[in-house]
Image (cartoon, rainbow, N blue to C red; front, side, top):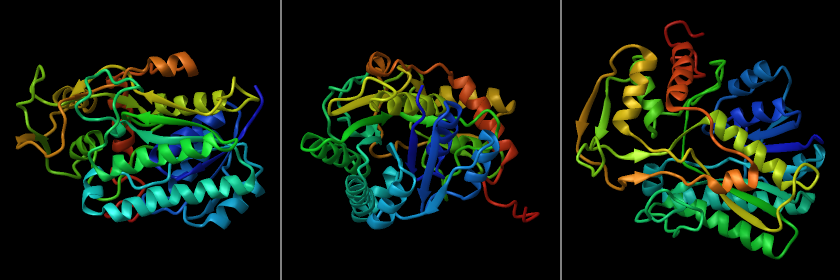
Length: 350
């Protein structure tokens, strides 16, 4: 298969770092930029260690249109995978202007830089939060859209902008709607390292398990589900990474069939797991009980949400193969070996 040069925005982040490894393993060239607002340069060192190769990198902000254009030109980029953006649902309700300015404004800057540099292929890191919360699962790509928080609204807005640009230009794009990424690379060298208090279930559970946090709060156990806790579709980050490789290869005419305009594709497992089921799997992986308590429901949490991943298999030849047990084992390996993430151990400063 011909090798592509793929640029990653937010290249040091959780998902992007795993995608970089997967792209290298497929024989592609990878370049990237990041402003390190929610990531660490150490993840790039770890990617190089896993892949045994160096990723050409530059510290750039999405707002720097001219800098991004120069970066794309210098590396003769064939396609961009766009990860960079703010991503906390709760925070987005407190700072909606910041989220629109960064996620939407930054994406506009990237699209302008791509247009100026002649880069015509884009994979966008979107989200299942674009779907209306009243839609029944499994969720298909033609389900009703209607995000209920500013984070989801920015993702949908960027999808719409990409669609408009592609309709009236030669841009070709795939919007990948993620469900809930979990797990880590099996080496234990890279994994999820959120700044501050984790907003997602798995990293919070594992930080409790490793002793960084006192206990897990389960927000309600009176939902209309078998065990009373909400059900979500959790996808191993390496499955997710392989989905990105499949998307960028399908998108580009030298490595796949190409895309006429824009496609929206779910990346999920098609299987839902409840909060208590995830907790049980994590306890099995860490081999000890994880302190937890049930508290009142949290505003905005739906009951059930999981993907219909059929379109990804039909268009990309991709499907998730790893289990929740796999994700917990891999995430724990990362967390146990890196209890403070990429930060130095406060006790040793190493």
